[in-house]
Length: 184
Image (cartoon, rainbow, N blue to C red; front, side, top):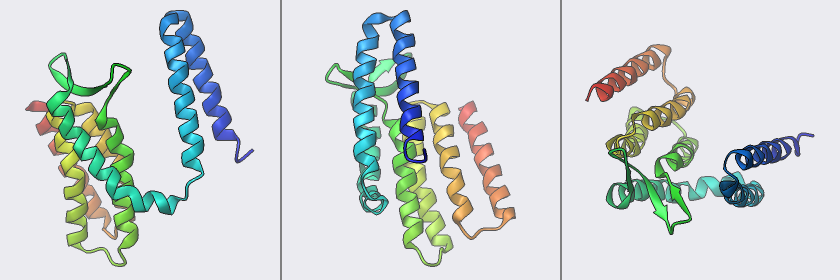
């Protein structure tokens, strides 16, 4: 059960989504099924790879994320005064900011894993690496995704040798930044 529970759950949820979509918009159901099959095949292929290989390739994932976020600002589809999606040959629209959460998180985790003793310089470097995609996402403008992105990276701080006071201070700075970003 341990090996098949997650795939079985994903298959069930995917088929339910296709079934629900077919009752609402039948034309989109077949397209959703194709994307579901592509996602399922990707899941099977990626689950066979070693996690060490992912850590080795994480720097490329970070670079691709930043490049796609910059490309989004240049050639993206404009919807309600926002530029969040890149049209991929008329087949689908790619939201690069959604790739930032797993790919940047993996890269930061690989940096932390390689470090024997984490110093303030390491923490500043990690914060700067996280800030680059955050600023690019915020420029889109997409405050909601920026907040989700930063909140998803916040648990990485639990692996750093910092005190509870510092975590509270960082949380305060994050909330203040969010309020300022919301206002402007």
